[in-house]
Image 1 (cartoon, rainbow, N blue to C red):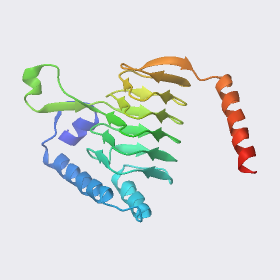
Image 2 (cartoon, rainbow, N blue to C red; image 1 turned 120 degrees about the vertical axis):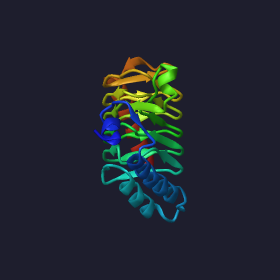
Image 3 (tube, rainbow, N blue to C red; image 1 turned 90 degrees about the vertical axis):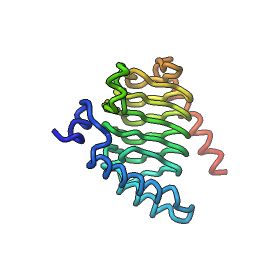
Length: 204
């Protein structure tokens, strides 16, 4: 197996491999171009993001600055928004579903390093895939650690460090992040009433 194949399969690999360095260089070039765009170049910026990532939905919007390792290992669904200072370290695959919102300084980490110092000092590492479902809102300064899966219809409170999987239809927060409560029909009723209020005021 090549170093890239080992990296993407979750095995130990060397990031100094020439093929990986070339992929890394491409990502650095594209993110530099993205982060240097102006507010008048939004469509061009989106075009660059679509070139950077493995795949995206039609409608995505990411506020610069943005950083990533490779970009090509990140797969994003429809109607994605990320606020300022998003970081996605994608040495393993990152899958983000539809209708996801990331607050400022949201970070997704897939890289891992050996616990054993002697092996770690050999500059050998590995990555673990991260999966984020549909309709997920990550608050500001949320960190998603390697190997985590976040379910559908989840809200993660700001400042949380997500170290373990989070199930569908919950609010979770903390360091380490834990489920606080389920999202219920009471929430649906409350926010439907708020929407009705908004629509009535908007029409006046």
